[in-house]
Image (tube, rainbow, N blue to C red; front, side):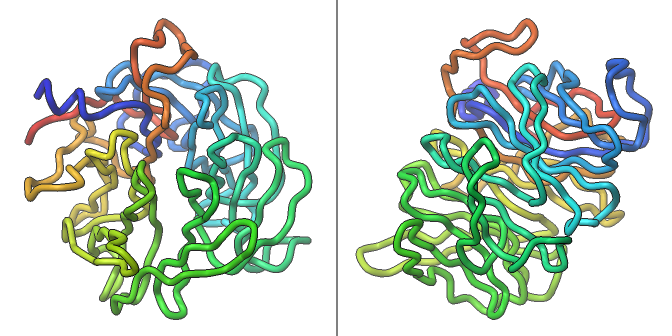
Length: 324
C-alpha cells in the first residue's frame, strides 16, 4: 500500500455526484449539483473549492502547470454541452472568471495558451471543433476538427479525437500538419492523454458502444505507433497519465451505471485500484493529474510537501485508495 501511494503523485481531477447527504461548506451548491472540490493525494480531506452560480453541472477540472490556477467547464443543465462555458479560478477557489463558450480546456505547458473544443450548434460560435485562446480568454481562433484536445509535454502538438472514422490524431500547433496514430476498428474514441515523455498515448475506445470499452496505449517505435490493450471492461471516458508515468486514472461503470474512479499501472498486468469510501457515489466524471509534484502552492492546511486532487462533485464522502 505504501508503494502505491507514492506512485500516486500530484493532482487528480474528478467529478462525482452522490445521493447520500454529506455535510459541505455553506458555500457549496445544493445537493445534487456538482461543484469543484480538492482532496489530498490519498483521496482524503475533501474540501469545497468553487461553484458557478446558475450552472447546474461542473466538470473536467484541470490544474495549470504551475499549480496556481484551475480551469473547468460548467453548463446550465445535464448534457447541454453546446452552452457550456470555460472558467478559471485560482488554487484557493478565488478570482473566478468566465472565459466564454467551450468545453474540456487544456493548458499549454508554458501556461500561455488553452486548447478547448466547441460543440456543434453552440450559439454565436462556428465552426465546431478545436479552438485555442490565450489563457486570459483573448485571441480565440479555430484550429482544426476534433474534440477533447490535450497538449504534448513539449507544447508542439495536440492530440485530438475524431470519430469519422474513430481515431486519434496528432496536430502540429504551428503548421497544422496531422498524423493519425490509431488504426483500430473502434466505433467511438472518447479521449486520450500523453505520457510524461511524450512517446506514448493512453486512450479509451469502444468497439460496440459505451460502456464496454478498452483502455489502450499506443507507443511510438521508430516510425510506427504500436498498439496494445492495457485493460478491458465497463469503463470511461478520458484517461489521464500520472506525472511519473507509472499510473493512469479512469472510471469504471457498474451494472447500475454508477461510476467510480480507479487507477492502474501503465505497465504490468494487475487489475485497477479503486477509490473507496464512495459506496453511495453514483457518478464520477473523468480525472486528470497535475504536473506539480513539489508545488509551491498551498490550499487550506496543505503545503508544498503534499500532492493533491482537484475534483468536481456533489455530496461526496472523502475517498482513499484501496488495494482491492
